[in-house]
Length: 219
Image (cartoon, rainbow, N blue to C red; front, side, top):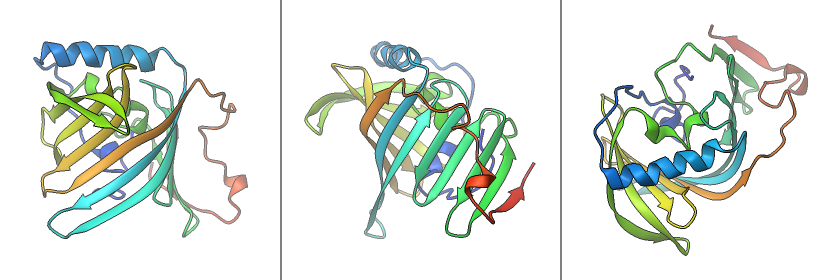
């Protein structure tokens, strides 16, 4: 899991935030919905999703939107994420963060940051480290969704995550992260594809595909 401190207040914030591991007492209605979400995603070996990421700072009157994509192994440690001009890759043993603007890759031990969230947990992050409560219902892009607040049990850079779960399909459609400075980070799932067939080396960074890349080994 990630230990590289990149964009701590940016699009990868969710993926580098510390999580607790104790078991909370939770809203039973929210638990039923989230159990269905877990079953939905864990039924598949791999997931591909295209998402939009929006950063909103009301105090600075700033709104920025980026597009991203991710491949993940639900509940596992393999992932490949592209967002905001960066790429994060892990095969479960080694993690890479590639910065194409400077042709640099940062390498770390995937186990070095155990206890932290990683992108492979995006669709199952609710399972550990949060108290959760069903807040109501809403409509996102024409889909009826449950709104569930996830509150971290231990100190973290954010105060809560609002999860939007499609009622008819038990799919996560949006995550809205509220940090303690009043900023919002919104991850909206635009498309999702279950069981894509990635190549065997898809979750490994290839130096051969990036001539001249500078390797920064953080292990």
